[in-house]
Image (tube, rainbow, N blue to C red):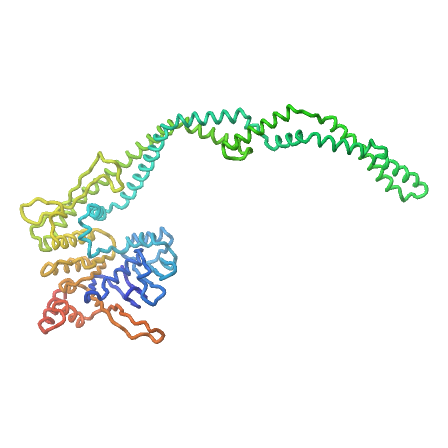
Length: 562
């Protein structure tokens, strides 16, 4: 149950703090006073769409705070527990809408997204708008009302999930079948490319080693000339480095008897000579191994040219050719097993459709079981609402041969007969504007009676109703308020007089604040006591001029509920 609503800088509301109570509460006031803005704020707090123009002129942001008592909302309480958002008897929702910055939402002071607000809101509040009778003409709205009354939410969720899986599988299967036509050409092309790469020995390719060998053979003359020159310098010249180091070593060794401290130096020079001899030996060996091989060089050049051509053909670097070969083999394997995948997808599609139709059948049974009782209750209500010969029926046709749909296989149509002896016909074709309003109210009341949502809100749903029918509407709303909270925006004194509580909504133009030159109208809401309530009912009865007779009539109407 809604226990408090706080609004700050929202549209024409500057600051408003309201306490709410169990039972039936009427909201009345002049046209344009801002009655519906309270419901707009409530809808926003429960995850409705936000827009920057909802922020009051001159303010940075608007803020809506809702407080709920969860004693009569076990599903809402369980939802909070399941989502780690609290487990207490109360719930606090806060939402801010900024003119320029990001909007924010909180449940029990924990930040949440709009989807969370919407999911929680459906367990707390049910809003019936003033244009509900217009939507009532739509088959989808009729089906949704029947499902809501039957409590088909979980069945519909499962059915929708099966439908989505079925649709995705069917689309995948269609793509597989479409690919079959191009498969043979693609297979032939892939086999040719794979054979081409295999012929080039791509799998054994060591591109860096090929480049290294090609570089050596291409520069063999330069390598031989340079190595031979160094061999002469180190050993074969008359004054070779080896001879001079040997001479230096002997000279140092001859000094050792006179100057033993040269021992280490002599050893190092002799060691250098030994290493130089080893280097010379290795250099001669390498020179003997180096041979000019024009044929090998030509083959290498042809191989590298072929690799670069293949790389350009596949639009990648030569060293990436082995990876490309593996990719093509994988794709070819996939094409080869396409028929297997098609068969698997066909089997999955068949299985999903069977599961879907089984679930859809259960949903149809639930709808049929509920439709008769709901139609009887609505018939009873519309007869009370000034249609004494009215008869309401719900026609449900199951299209078993139809493809799966997210809402099931049923076509739901509300039918009504307004005159005696006439069979029920489609509601949209039979009911007049006034009759449609009464039908809408009867349907909403009937559906709400079976719902567990603790707070029901009716926004001018009594449009087009008057006289004794309006009194009956008020009684029905009062009866609903006997076991749950009902809020109703109304222009009918017969309805407002039946309320347990009465709020007056009005507009005022306050004095500008000291630190601001902004002046604008404000919506204000006042709870009415017995005297002020009599005045408001009289205003609703008699307009601008309130006479003693009008006041007496208002008092008489209020006496009906005392």
